[in-house]
Length: 329
Image (cartoon, rainbow, N blue to C red; front, side):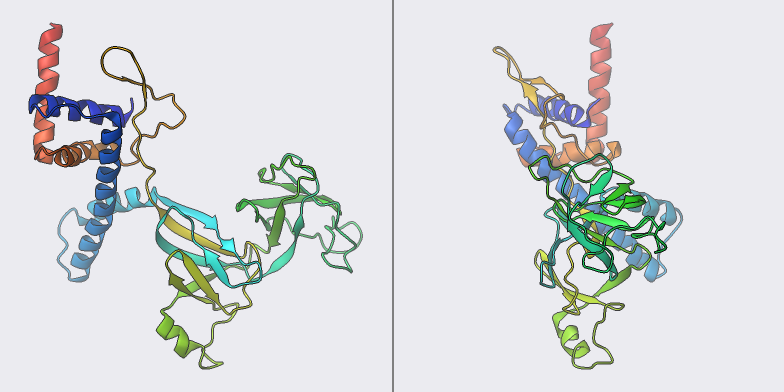
């Protein structure tokens, strides 16, 4: 059962009871998106309130369970992504759906990079590779006396799509077996760019203000380095220091994304109300827990112009259910 359909049905029932007229699917979706954002942001407000109370030693019984519940919801929106940037500069674009940046990471040890020359499931194929003495180095199975290159577990980033995988094994000088398929191009030639990094060397990038960066870079002792990098946030872009951090796929973020906009989809019928249809490609349910349904209903009703408390939504729902049961009997 779709949560968004239950919410809409209850909202329409409340509207009808209060003689507020018709709520179109377009208006409902608009209000639903805003209601979800209000509740989404309230999770962060509540979390900060509880943390502040804990710091002031004002937390009471049940505090840990409440905070755990808030963290579980917030964590459900936590994602990781490599960033678009590099290309000879130390600026990187943040994902379009980012709400809050948790951490920024840097892979300082770039093993090799290049472009694919053919497409094969769960493989990276680059027939342009040259012997190990030249650049970029060819892949090596280890049977020639050299070490296996790149090592099993190395991170492979499709810098065209930002998808990532890991090296499972080296097939030959031009081909790697990957843990997952990240190269899908079917153009001729199917060239997608890639970077391969040593997974064992990853460092967290410290966020600093522009003012602090000025003082850090004023001394060679405190200046950011590849092992102790720093970044400055400006809008949807971060600038990473030192300035030689420029390799495609070298910077990764862990962030909280915005919830996807909910959309109640329907079939158009000639007579009567539009009919709910969750099979449409653009259908999107609410991403908040089911327990937030009364809060969503109350918020949407407020946008329509009906003042109703969350507690009253419970009572209304119970009354409607009782009435429906009596009709069926």
